[in-house]
Image 1 (spheres, rainbow over the protein chains, first blue to last red):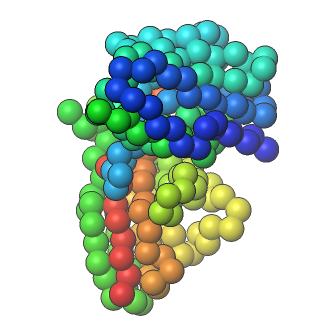
Image 2: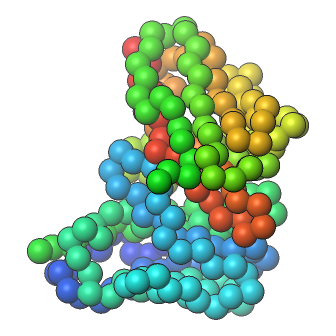
Length: 110
Length: 115
């Protein structure tokens, strides 16, 4: 059974700081890994998708890496802004199943 | 614009009634859609995997007679909460999986309150 853990559970940083969110998974037989953000009371917004054959993806200030062998992914956010405040979730897709991590609640302080 | 549309966003109903939530894939034909439930301050809990043209696959502990899922077309999946009770009050979110890439797109969620 796939288990996905995110560390830290919560993070508070001053505006402008670079930060890293971590996601670890127990079963390396995955199809892809996806990072999302969720604002309170809202659905999930896709940030980055990394296929199992890829090692990283970049979009603007975001960079996500994937190391299947060690069961880890990181989401790097550069020059954080107050608008980045949200809960960040990673999701690991295996055959016919997607498992979500526990989430990291990020607060960027102006 | 939205890739997945979920409706209604909020619904309040009396105990014992049934509520239907719709999830539409607007941008692509989705053979696979997922339904999740989210409790306050918790992550998403997968309820079932909905495959077009076949029966949904329910996760352990999820009552299939309670949560009816229909995926009658490649762009629409519905979740019906039958004989709803206050403990069914929750935030329900659907997602559609894009064929090929496997990328997931989520609806905005539906907040159900059962009085």
